[in-house]
Image (cartoon, rainbow, N blue to C red; front, side, top):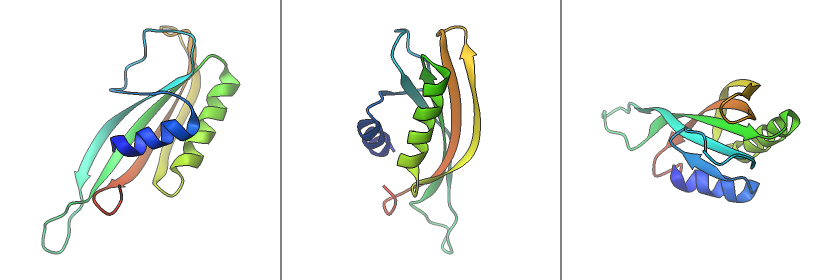
Length: 114
């Protein structure tokens, strides 16, 4: 999963931070991400190296419009790799003094998909 996130971050030119916690440094646009769930898929013989992973991305931007642009770019980069389950925001985050938009996605994880 880290490889996928690293590649998307590199293509977008926006830093990604794991663990779902906001940076303490203010001023730059960034994305945090975390795994919400990781559910093994069932197969006929009950063995599987594949799982369905739910990811949450939190987009932080200095301007509201930029939060939309970054989220659109994230969805374009993840197109074909996962499904968008939910979008919220952007809302002004008092702690970071930035606009925050969240996107939940579902992706398949396993040798065939990474």
